[in-house]
Image (cartoon, rainbow, N blue to C red; front, side, top):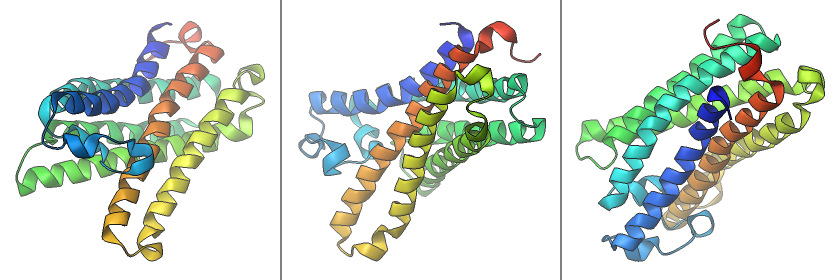
Length: 234
């Protein structure tokens, strides 16, 4: 894989590895939360991503992987903007909007990862809004990206992008469906413990397709020959 493909691929892979490896490392280390960790969070909702990684040796691993991930995300969205321009897939203004929203998400990921596991109201605020804007900026950028790509899926790159665009559309649709359900959960359920478990399940099930979306974007880069036809910043 060449540089743009590799960077975007890693931007998707590293967050997935960071969350799961931090979770497993804390189980292995036997932290004070370890008994609650022994479950499948995608199904049981026993622990959120933040709680799984905010203490013990898993915290250090999580930070060490997520901070480089934020840099890769910034680069990835700049690549996406240039890629769209090279394909004549949308106006420069729309490309800048997509890249800008993605960049906002990447910057707030730095805030979240840096202050995860720290104490104090100010740090708690940074973590809370860091993760909110990371998810929101990234999700909106991906949504606008498929809004641009879906109507052109049979035209772009001679139709070679139709399959990855469809996969990305499914992943993004899943994210937004989970987001809608999350906003309604308190209207459907009234058990606080159950609501907490549902929130944790949604967090894991939301983050996975969001990160996987970048792996699919790397797939699109490779199929369209992005690295061969033009370079970042031209």
